[in-house]
Length: 133
Image 1: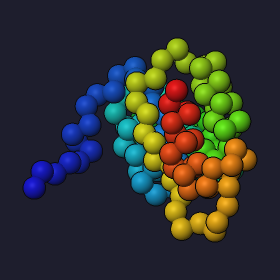
Image 2 (image 1 turned 60 degrees about the vertical axis):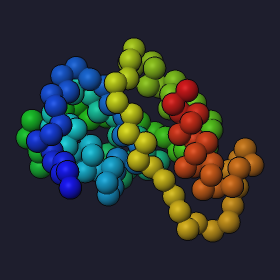
Image 3 (image 1 turned 30 degrees about the vertical axis):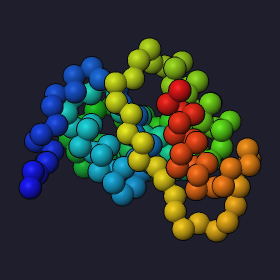
């Protein structure tokens, strides 16, 4: 069975990256590893600014040589947030090399997004599709 490790990540020189849900779990580990391979910038996209800011600070303190990691507010359940995050990103960058759609929810109470989609479908499918456009 093939294996993959952080040593398999190539040099990401001058690449711009967005990782959604990068403040915890697999998203955090993804930000950690990608930021150590020389990208221009990594945007940690998340709903909770305080938690994301603490994550970025923690990352900078524990990983010497880490790339420029910036917070990007993004709530995939809110289309107005998705559009605002895309606009904010485009106001700072002219291109995007890597998008890691890590954010997702499951086993949540029944509910709808503001646009009327079932909450899991809206967050896990519609939000990322809109953000990617």
